[in-house]
Image 1 (tube, rainbow, N blue to C red):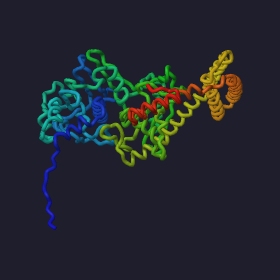
Image 2 (cartoon, rainbow, N blue to C red):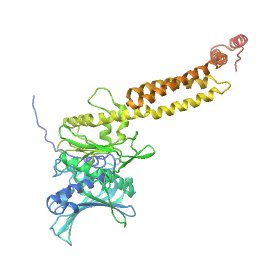
Image 3 (cartoon, rainbow, N blue to C red):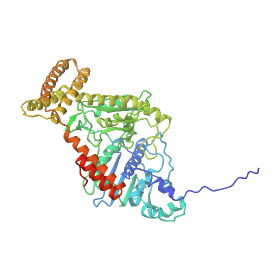
Length: 520
């Protein structure tokens, strides 16, 4: 058998660009997070290089007053003119190391193409006499990649037609920055139109410091340092048109929205990875119920940047890989807490969408730790709290009182019916089980009160039995008559459909004579 090697040249069609940009992120607003993340990497490097001091590092998000554009600017080291154009025009290529940088795949910088007509990068490195501007014609790119078209050029040719790069003389050689401009917004996310939505979103996902007024802020940071985790952060400002910029902080405050009130956060727990791969904090509260604040749930972060929202921990609450049976009853308890899990960047790799982690053995091992140390104990705690709330002396007392009032009304009624008495008798039976369960988990000082409630319940049951004995015997004649009429209706229909006319008339007369039920 002859073997022949067939030469070929791999070719990446233009639609690969669509997969790596338009199709990459689940929500278009995540493009904003990507630009802040890239600014974060640039600022960290600038601090390390001595270009700026930590308190000078900042990212500014500026929303046009007419909401037609958005700008994200950082004062990091920027890109040098020698390679700025080639770096920015590359897709899926980056010089970054995932162990040292928040972004490293070279994809996120193009995420904004999906909702603007022009994506413009302007950057300058310190000491250089020129700056570089790279413009992606996003509207043209979208048109070329329309599913209705017959575009056949490859990815590189397509980018070359939609991208221009230009250098300009700089007025100040000492300046250094990187600016992203999304011009001509096209079906933008709500965050690009509503400044409050933008601030709420960025305060949750960006690598920000805690607000100085948050009572647990310093404690959390100190415990993180003790565990070997540095909670890196940047200063982030959001500017609405011509208004003054507003600095953002993480959204955590001393109270939590639970049910119809704000309950105090009574403390913080600090779960720790047995292998040192993550560290975290979770809230404590006495109030029973889910948190209603937008920042509810336990967030997972790498380099202090959020991975998705609460999806990662919610899935662990819902499904344990440590047991064979589903744990769906715990999923609702994921929102009973707020908190953060900080993952060592060397321990797990975020997936390309940054809505989870690469599914490998390292993540599976870490997932099991998060289950064992956080999801399982917090789920059990919330379940016990929820159960205890139903079995509390206060709530059982309210139920007994309401039952007593209903029984008292029946005792003065002339003719109580079974339809009224029987549900109350069922309720007394359920209360007996409820009190018995409450006694098994009660504190010693609550036992006497529960035993007294058990006695009251027994008395109410006896009074209900006396009332029930007076209820008139129930007659079934009406129900029997209705059943006969319904049955005969079915028979008449069957006879009419299956008998000849003269047979049908004879049968109808006989049946009507015997049963008294006439055919319609």
